Length: 397
Image 1: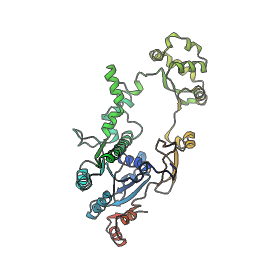
Image 2 (image 1 turned 90 degrees about the vertical axis):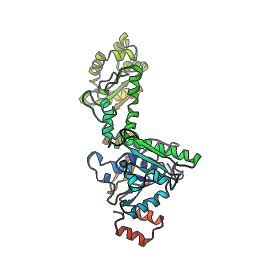
Image 3 (image 1 turned 180 degrees about the vertical axis):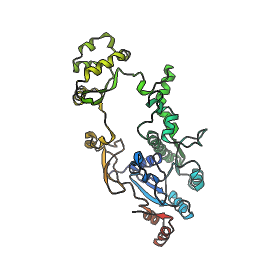
Image 4 (image 1 turned 90 degrees about the horizontal axis):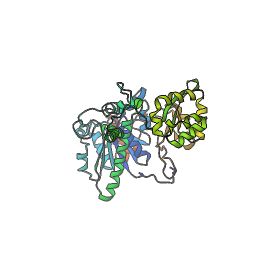
């Protein structure tokens, strides 16, 4: 949003003890919405900073718009600084293994005795119950929660191609935090908010659970499902290009047949309704694949766009940096990475009064704001130097 407009969470302070994806996502959402989010890291920095492979993008994406202070929480001085920061906070967010925050004296029960208005967000693998002691990862809950079964083929469960539970778990944590802020305006009291990977995954597959409840038929994996739509598939076209095409209503079927001159299909009584076309897919889809294979993806997409029919190119993630819609609408914004390199990054997928929420601060370097925050808490220059000398606090350029 423009600088002269106040962001929705401006004036809200969040202190987060988070790493990996779930907890940092919650903080990123709150930060993008205007909250001041202070990330407390180990003196060596969040381990996510150093991940390779598929984890290389975790830290820069989920830690923008945040400040960083690096503390040794195994030292009394480090814990004291954490307590002082928390005393200034509206929200504390954490996603460490159960028991970790209790050992540090930073759990909700300990902190609320000092500040009953504090909102405390915990991101866990499971909500309290028989599984709560287990160690959970996104892939673990996808397997046990039915999502991997639905994504892969029978006998070949496959995780979704994104950290979907981690990210959505963080989103639900942020929603809970904002609900607690609203409740606090009425009661003056904070509360504990809990979000969990497994329960998030169950929510994602609830539509398939309800399919079974309504029909009595178990949902089949997506590659083998009986589609709800007559044409809702990926087609291989000229020069082996691929495109997704959808024809999901009777009106769209007429438009599709007219656009490509398929008068025989339009007149076929077996294909008069969407449900009828679903029943005829065994011969209809091979026939359509053969007829459309002579077109290029560009030609097919032009026809579908002209007639308002659903279509999509099969894009790779790196292709989205050059997506004309994202670039034109401001969906991507330039951001500096901790190593100084600049890149484009997607913004939150919402607008407020027609405006996107911008990046105000690049992902911080380790302890980038340590001195600033210590000074704010009343530490003198000499005291700050001593903390650095004892490696209680760190800042790495």
